[in-house]
Image (tube, rainbow, N blue to C red; front, side):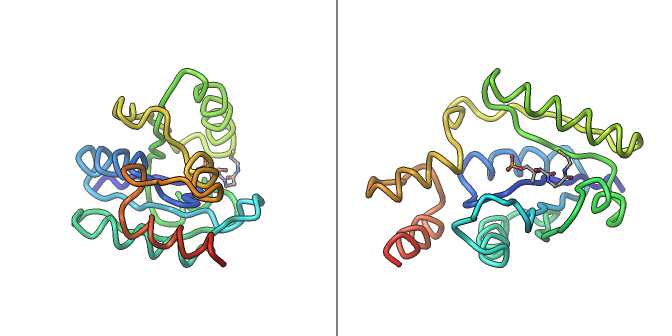
Length: 159
Ligand code: PNS
């Protein structure tokens, strides 16, 4: 069985993330969406909340599970018996950071492969940071994140 990992901060998850997860679920027998607990970015949502949002939104994908991890991604990949890291590419400017990360992970663990999946054009401009900025400045994030995430965001911003 080929298991892949879709890792990320997911603070919060967006429709672009769901697109990548759905694509990974069609390519692999099993997919673990892995929420990085320590993202050092003063996250808006706790790791538990980020996991809960992903669990809700991935419920329609029977071969997808959601978990969180601490420490190095490659250690977690090996720990759960996965073989492949799946990352989404939106635009060319993503490439430099993604390449650096893929090479670093290969250096740390040569047997773990990274594959890139192109995000649908519709979401090529979308990121968690953009979504947070819009929400914090009182704009509408409708159509950018699932409805339940939008509601959580609105509640979080009001706090
Ligand atoms: O959604 P993001 O913020 O682009 O995800 C980045 C993430 C969490 C996948 C990356 O920062 C990561 O793998 N962090 C775990 C620590 C690690 O393994 N670092 C070395 C590889 S860069």
